[in-house]
Length: 205
Image (cartoon, rainbow, N blue to C red):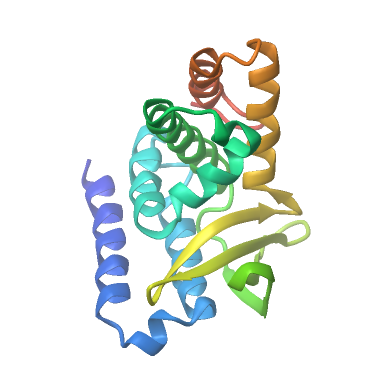
């Protein structure tokens, strides 16, 4: 519990810093990802129980990711027919899945050096920020962040680890679940939530 309180305090420090820095610094996606990436790696150590990692990453996701924009992309064509209630249920299930998946994945790299290597503009006013997690043995892990400015506050809209896009993978998964459920969104949402609870390859609960 003491360890978790210390990690939670680090998240609070990051949040406070992001809010109190000048507007110009807030708008710089490179600095934003440098802080966020370092923060995420610091609090995701494999020695920290999974439920605590999930709690911390859930706070990071809620504060620094554009959840509604990502969810809209993941819904794809099904966004047109979803009811407001279904959208709300999907958003909750989607965030649970994302938080669980990335709490596991980032746990493998905790404590290892994180550095931003480049940034360049992308379509739709977004910025692609390239970074690496430097591993003591083996090649570095390439992490690319897609960032958009929301009223002066940078927000993450995608994370790609070694070329695998978070939002693309989730869109493909949900489309598959919809097909398997006979286009029953209520069933697909339940299946999506269950997929987040299942252990991912190379991880443990």
